[in-house]
Length: 176
Image (cartoon, rainbow, N blue to C red; front, side, top):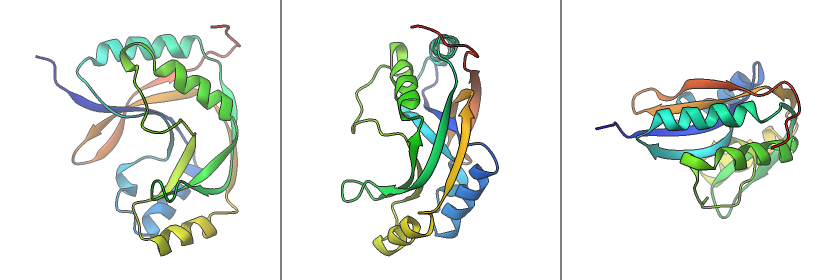
């Protein structure tokens, strides 16, 4: 019988920004920071017992999707709906939306609890004063990079989210 695993699919934030944001998250007391790599979610945590079908699907998505530029700048929040402060995606929103929609087909087809909004979480489930602090202190954060790949993450109860596989995007525009 196949083992059920908790997986996620995301775009990793490259260095040096990934470590900067992860260290910031840890510095304000977010105990999950060391177990969650800095990322833009494409598929939230999902249980699956068929990693082979998912890998095949993600390989197909990657081969039909070209890379795109992302510009992260400033902060936002999902409060009062959810106690989250994030760095905003100000360029590359449509690229993230298209990639997430493609990933959420086939074996990863699912309804989301909230509308998809690409972002990078920097504070989650902390008290209001700490969320306010994160919102203010990272308001000036900014970086730019090209998304050339995305990752399948598998959750391990002891060490957190780990990259299982990476999927390189097509170097050329592809019509899907």
